[in-house]
Amino acid sequence: MPTRGRVALATLSAVIFDVDGTLVDSERDGHRVAFNQAFADFGLPDHWGVDVYGRLLTVTGGRQRLRAHLESRGYAGEQAAGLAIELHKAKTRIFTRMVHEGAIQLRPGVRQLVESLHDDGVRLFVATTGSRDWVEPLVTHHFGTGVFELLVTGTEVHALKPEPQVYLTVMREAGLQPAGVVAVEDSENGLRAAQAAQLPCLVVTNPYTENDDLSAADAVLDSFGPTAHQISGKPVPLVEGAVTEASLRALADCPERRADHAVHPAPAVESGVYVGTTEGREDCPLPHASARSTVREIEVGGPCPS
Ligand code: XBP
Ligand code: MG
Image 1 (spheres, rainbow, N blue to C red):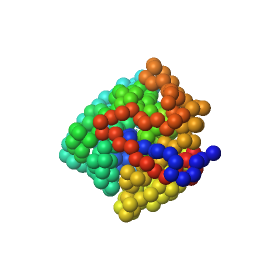
Image 2 (image 1 turned 60 degrees about the vertical axis):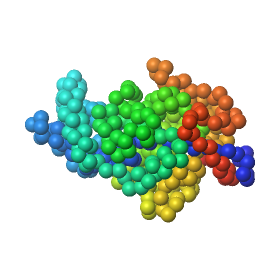
Image 3 (image 1 turned 180 degrees about the vertical axis):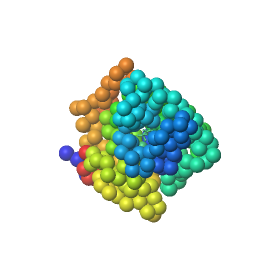
Image 4 (image 1 turned 135 degrees about the vertical axis):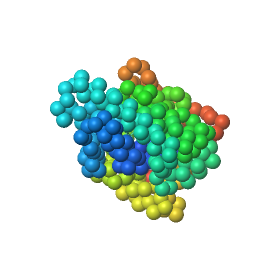
C-alpha cells in the first residue's frame, strides 16, 4: 500500500543521460549527414534520406546499422561486416570533425538542466550507444571535463541498447544502486535499456521517436523546455515550462519501486559485468556516498510510477 503524506525520503543523487536524441538532436542533421558523406567518399551510390534514416534507427549502433543496410542491399554477411567497419570508421572521423566545429548543438533546455543539476551536487553520467571517439569531444565541447563524472559508450560494451549493459556499467563503476537514480532517454530502445537496469526513466521525445512505444516510461515529455508538454506517465512538475531537478526528483525511487525490485532483482549480465542485488533496498537506503551527493525530502503521496 502506498503511504500518504510527508513520510518518506526520496533522493536524487544521480542522473544518467543518453546522448543521441537526448542531450543533442544529433541524428537527422548529424550522424545521417556523416553516414552519407562516408558513402560518397567510398564512391557508393547509397544515400539515407530523412525518413529512411528514421526507420534505420531501430538498429542501434552505427556499425550495426550500416551492416544491416548493406545486407538488405544484397552484400553477403562477411562482405557487409567488413565494409561496415570501414564505412563506420570514416563516418566517425567525419562526425567527430562536425563535433569539433560546433555543428552538433544541445537540445533546448539541456544546458540549463545539466548545469543546475551539477550546481546542486547531483552526480551526472552518460550512458550511450555512440562511439567514444566522438562522445567524449562532444561532452567536453559543451560542458568541459568537470560536469559529467563518467561516460560509458558503445565502445566499452558489447551488448548495445536495448540491452542494459551500458547502464549497468555506469552503475557498477560509479557504485550506484537504482534508488535515487533517474535515466533520461529519447527512444524506446533507450527506455528499455534503462528499465532493464531497474532505473526510472524520463523520456523526452524528438521527431524520430515521438511514435515509439513509450507506454512503459515513468514519464514522457515532448521537450526539456521552455515550453515542454507532458505526453504521458506520472505527472512531473515543470518550472516555467522546463524540466528541472524537481521534475527528475519526482521520478526518483519510491517504496513501491523498491519493493518491486526486491522481487525482481536487477539482472545479471553476460560476462559478469554486473550482478544485481536487493541488499539494503528495504529501508530507503541512500545511494553510494559521494562528496557531491545531496539528499532531498519530497512528498510521497500518490502511486509510484509503474
Ligand atoms: C544512438 C545510436 C548510435 C548513433 C550513431 O542510440 O544508436 O549508433 O546513431 O553513433 P542511443 P555511432 O541514443 O540509444 O544511445 O555511429 O557512434 O554508433
Ligand atoms: Mg537516444
